[in-house]
Length: 398
Image (cartoon, rainbow, N blue to C red; front, side, top):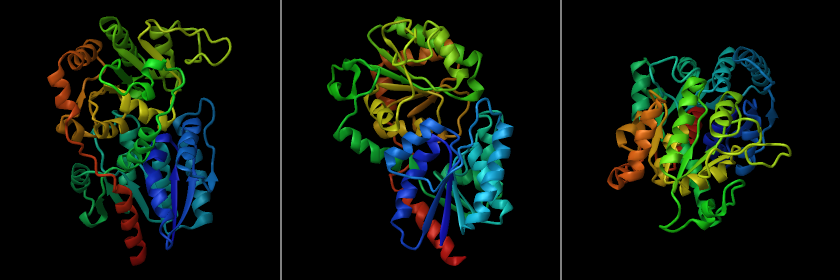
């Protein structure tokens, strides 16, 4: 029995890595890996971290490539891959262009498709864009739905998916996080570009400087929303000179431009100063702008942080496992479980709201502790095993 696992971005690789490692333990299942390399540099970091080597690398990304061009190339090349391999089941994760194209290519080849992290919904095709459309369209083409939570299962049932086609597994990102968290707590990495006193390895006491970890990359936040976010960070850094704001900046130019303009001198292109000629300098000494981190370093920094300010989906799932409050810079989330549990709060992209909510957690210890001690609704670290077992059962019946 042969499975083809298809992925292309760093988040997909992180969330599929535990499944791939479990599949390697199943002698009855042959696992073939195909990557589109939708995120080239960040994908390769995760593959190396988990010791995963693809069988086929399509290397689809091109400079200034539109979503339409990426989609057409991916469908064509994935179709050729599946026609050649003829797997018994195709597996993909999440809501990326790669995932939707994998589902459509499998449908065209009449191959069953398994969707990891199925059933997430905002109900708004514009937010997140284009991810909400990708996940809705993918569900219509899916044979096996691996829902991370009961809420996701209920979303699928409302859309007419048969109950027997759904398996509630927990989220595999918790599996991945626990694997790497064990490593970094045993030997904490040194993070390039971070001052010594903020390093995870030297900050293991109650008197350690407080650190706010920031990430941002959502397309719907491009332009004015990102300007608001950057202005809020600058305001917070001025209000709290003893708190350090650490921002690994996404590679997308639509993110880097406002960050450099508002939080830096606007001229440099390398954030950690390692490239000759870069003239970047932060606006304040307690703002630390960095190049994107490896997943291992990022997990260590999440563990080190006091709280997290993000528009990411995966971090809303990971942060509860390290007991860190998450303020989500979006108007709506497909992960309402974290909000309901109290570990995450939607703050949008309004500058004053972001400043007020971060300030509240930095000044009100009781409010902070309520969020930090909230229950993690995303699983127990055994999601990958449930996915693999469901795949095995399905293939034995086929």
